[in-house]
Length: 283
Image 1 (cartoon, rainbow, N blue to C red):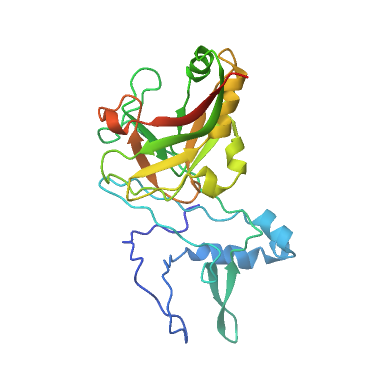
Image 2: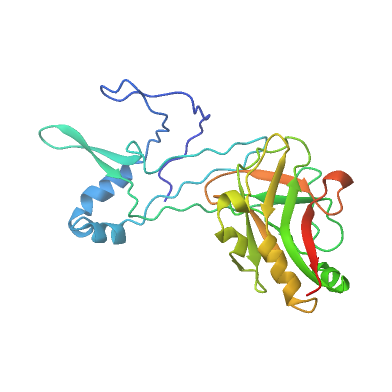
């Protein structure tokens, strides 16, 4: 049932003051249909005997927004802040008061996103098979990129000697200028046959070694994946190789997007690349 329908302009720097508060908070206040308060009052005997009974009785609130015909925006709301609550005002024969239904970390909160890329602005295009001038990562259940090294093990075999990987860096360079706000960090994981993923062995060494942080000076992100590349070489050319998935970090609640040069980028200098330092060992 629709309880409220409002139009508002986000003012994230405007603070509102409550009671004796002198600091102020940034809030959005939504007037809710009184029918919800009446429902609580009328059903209190069955739905308010315990927290468990209330959660079974009241399934929560759903917030959604309409599509924007022009440039839109994304707003963040901190549901665990003490100023995030559903407040019900009521009166009896003596006075008027209110009761707050607070949000707690013990209860479920989740985001759901739907994307339509059919009208994405140029040069955003998706082609998984033939031509990839650019690659994309997007938070909020958006896109990820898969990077595969199909000829790497065969290259190592053709050396006719043992190849020891001293260092392997996957380097991604931003494209299309400042079209979107870049994520502060990306995540690289090992892709599996069923499109699930697992940790890369290099990830276990530590974040400073593994990388993944965006550098605004170079407009680049790099990952050190030396052990992963060594494993591919040792497995041989005939072994399964499903590549690496690249995601945005904290993509479930951090709305960021990035475009970087792909293997077919017209900017040949900044194409996605793997830099390897290796030794040849005859033993």
